[in-house]
Length: 427
Image (cartoon, rainbow, N blue to C red; front, side):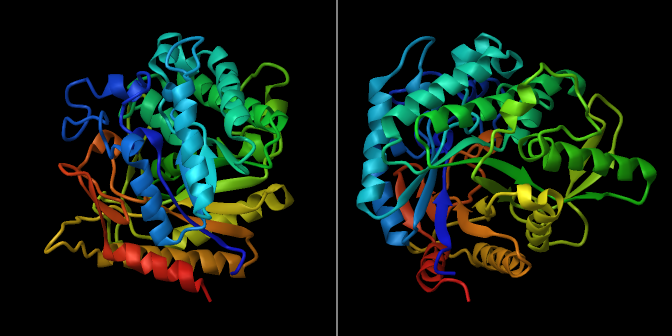
């Protein structure tokens, strides 16, 4: 697998801290009582905005070939009509630092941190946000495009759509009925298509969309649960992929749309990012959201309560190939990892469960490749522990332990293990 790209991934809202940027929807959301598990916020997070040079040294020590990070939209456009040159400078030096260390930057333009001023103007419910996104993408590409080869438009729009706008568990914390919330999904997809076009116009070599996938199982043989699992499969695994690769929404949805939107959404991409963590069991419930996701029985679970099911990654990758055929571009696993109950003893953080999880999922990637799926790379989530959205700092996904009071980065045993995997490759 000499051509296989090994990497890690982070996101701006989870690591950077707030210094030097405008207000995001997550800053506002975290002020609500009870919405963050430990009542924390990302005001400091991992202080990456000040400690980026140390983090580049950590990446170099790990030996990755690529680093997938996101740009904070509020750092670039802190208010309507404003472009923050200092924000562009920050990412400029980050890209240069990566290249100087032989690490390929993979720049993701949106990882859920919409500027609050845009939310106040309607957010993703308003069509103009998609066009504002394209303008923002063009601004970043104009500054970084001469050195960045691979761009991602959006990360996990399904989660942002459902958790942020239907269940209210994530920012902006809305509880829209599912049928009314659909316009949010459409505008996210439209922003992706417009973003691809803007990046192409700026000379981008490779553009991808990053989606999350999770095979859905009925929680019971009951017809209601079977139907609920089918609906969930459409929403997570097809809603944000069919329009991009097939130029049509799933038949189960069939919305009425402005003419030409699907042509924009289906602007060709060069790569599909696949984020995978687990499989889901789904059961029917009464209420505005007619289903709920539960952990399937019979599986070990992570500290997040998610089933450890590496076979689901193979199923996902092979299923994408089978569904989309020649329309499926090359694939990169852009996130895979697990939360563990990590602690430090005598300066060491031993995390054998994470090593076992990652090793099993790399085996799943190897199986998918053996079955003919064109998988080009694998990125662990995440470089180090960080602000885990509504879970605050209670869940740790990192290859390095983050001691938040001191901001020390302490490589875990999984860090050394992954460094060895990268050095040796997969057989």
